Image (cartoon, rainbow, N blue to C red; front, side, top):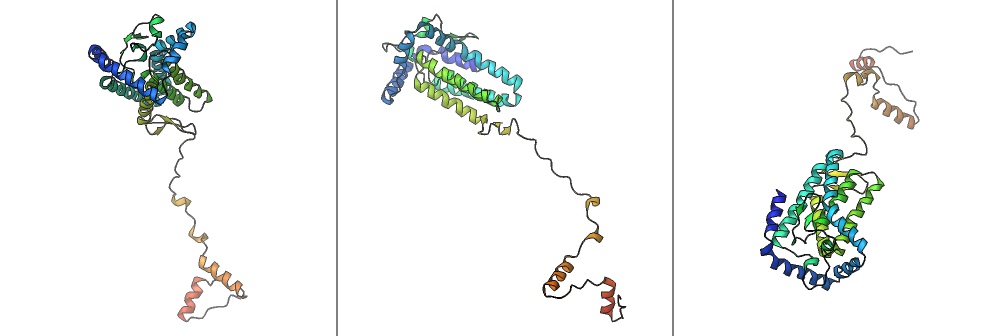
Length: 289
């Protein structure tokens, strides 16, 4: 369904050309004002290094779809507790991107006329199809960068699948490399990259897929991996576990004995219940001696 919506938006290319061109120049103007216009300088630098340019374009064309779908499949097979929130986060990221593509089409830097950008993808012999899958790319869908959004998603999912392994931090390299590649190949603006990160992180937090500081992973509000098993409540006491009434000490007698000892008097043992009853009734009581 998402592919059908994407295809419909792409089919409106003729009517979106003018707004996409205007918005692309607006983004570039904002970046110049903010000092973030790195695209032209880095694009010309990459063009002077042919082999590096080929590698960058290959990463742009193949890692975006292939790596993301591979991690989603791995998540389904090896991390069923992570799969549902991860899948939902990816869907939300794409939905947000499609809405912006339709409302705010933005032409990428490499297609801006008279701006001096070199289309590295075209020079490397690639067309407008992202592989694998053969999905025709929307040429006016620069903002936000779904390349960046998917790369952030991949990093977070890998960290969720490996919550206790230090190697999980290597996953951060993927969005870093992606950010560099999409800018130097003039496929995205710096602001596109920032927007992609924001959209992806909002979707990841919205579906509950986050990682805590202690390495415990949470998904949809529930623990995926617990550090220790949940405590088992103690069973209710049975009559056999209750103490024998004959063994219970009268606390009042102990307190009276301690009070007499403190006043210098010898403690007087408590009288038997029968003797106390006889004395109260006026009957003679035999001495214990």
